[in-house]
Image 1 (cartoon, one colour):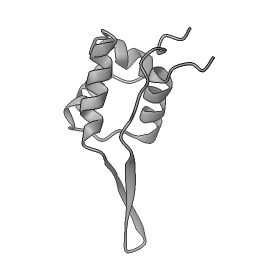
Image 2 (cartoon, one colour):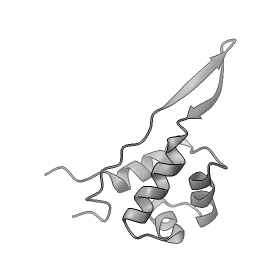
Image 3 (tube, one colour):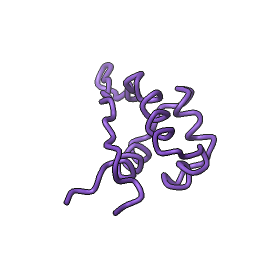
Image 4 (cartoon, helix red, strand yellow):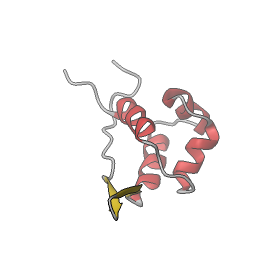
Length: 88
């Protein structure tokens, strides 16, 4: 069983906004920060513990949980892989 198994991540969807043909930063669902914190606490993980599993710095996870930063796609993918339950 994987370390992340047991709590299914239900990440809010994000969208990419296009203005005049140019891609602008993704708009992340405001529930992302709250969801990330809730999932971490349900697992009993510290910021440092989740950061190690997502290959990120503790301050990055903190900034994501407080909404100070928007997640990059590769970070969301790592978090999703960690929290997604293993199919039997």
